Length: 296
Image (cartoon, rainbow, N blue to C red):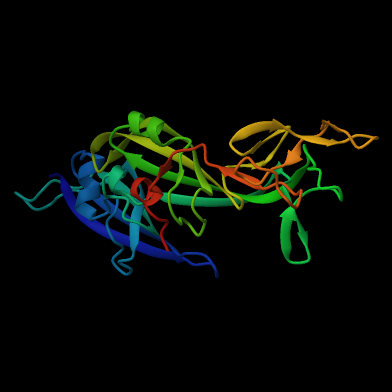
């Protein structure tokens, strides 16, 4: 193999309060013939994903191998013994706490990120004390075109897969959750999009190809259904559609210049306040079946 001696020169631990510790090992290998870096890493037990000797929860994530000539090699006075070392290889291995990076990329755990931000949505309700009511004026005419802010949470899921699920990505984009997911009620989370990038990585001497996939979900407090004030110039009475009317200056019935409030079934709302219709326009899917749940 060409190895004369393996000498561990030192171990270092850096642990800042509040952060995870970092471990470093420095190993010197003396050789009388060149040896591949991969073989040196295996010989010293510093392959990617290998545990630290003193802390098995820390895995090797970074290895540097540097070879240099020994300027004054010791001559070998013993006949028949191996030749003296002429090359010194220095191996610096760094360890971090985390998932085992030695497993295949598509076997690694997904990485979840959450970001909360504000978004403007149509203003449809107001609070009268603790009671939520449709947003109308004192004559029960609905206000249109007003906006209000609400919280929106962006969820980014980064994962590795052997192939890019193109058909699946197209099938679930613009779908909403069919039940409670990530603490949000049904129809409150929408799949915004799924993207992928083909990459390659070397793991312990082997090159592997895989896809880095990013999935983006958007969660809204009021959900993704269309909330529509039930107003119109026509209404249904006795199975017939009739034109909404108001009384003129002389008490005559004239067509209404403004839409009137309806009761959600096409009829006049006796209170004059329109019902707010809830219309789902996106397909529902089981989010946990496609994206799982974030790590606790």
